Structure formats: C-alpha cells, structure tokens
Length: 142
Image (cartoon, rainbow, N blue to C red):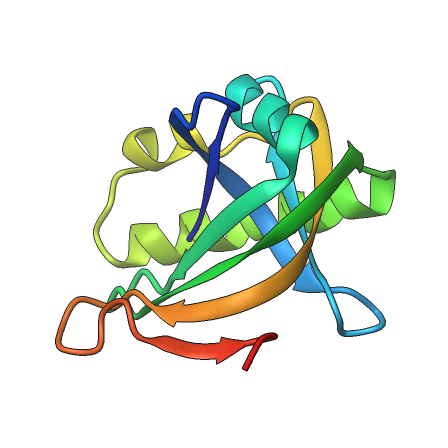
C-alpha cells in the first residue's frame, strides 16, 4: 500500500494514494502513479513545492517504511498507466485474500487522470508500529 503525504504553503497536510511504484531505470529515484482526479490537493501541493513523504506498507503485516524527499510531477505515459493498472489488480487481489471486501478497497484505488510522480529520496524511516517506529534507517546527509 502506498500513501502519499504532502502539504501546501500554509503547511496544511494532505494525503493521497499511489497506485503503483517502482525504481527508476537509473535506480536513483522512485516513480509513483497517482490520480489527479481523486487526489487533486495532493497533486497541487507537489506541483507547488515538491515536498513529499510516501509510506509503503505491506498489507499482510503492516511492516512499513516512510520515504521523504523531493518530487517532480508530469502526466503518466501509457506504459506507466499500464503498470499502475497491474498494481491495482495485484493489491485488490492481495487484500481480498486477507479478507477485505472489494467495495472497501476499490474506492481509493484510481488511476483516472494519472500523474507520474518522480521522487528523489532524501531519507528513509521505519514506520512499523513498535520500538523502532520513527527510526531513520538511511539518509543522503550524514
């Protein structure tokens, strides 16, 4: 699961969901697809200031990591939309196997008006509940 955190110039937080993420071919950035139709404020914030935090959580046990960094945004290309569509099928299937009903899953998973967010990661934190929650595990700065 992929939750995008952003904020506007007044530092008001906003969240959205990504529907697909992968490492760039060079390995130095992460690409995510998000719906500008479903998450317009998140997309507007990223266009405005590029500040982003993305939490990746494994649905089976909620092992989670949060990546923080800087983002650029553009309309997604057809092959990127296809990757996003494959992710939607996979995550719905995964969550249904875990007992969730599709009508609870589907409302937050859209790639309508898809945008590609390219994130340059500056730091990574453990977000899994427990004693290590919030611990920085990697950073570009010493």
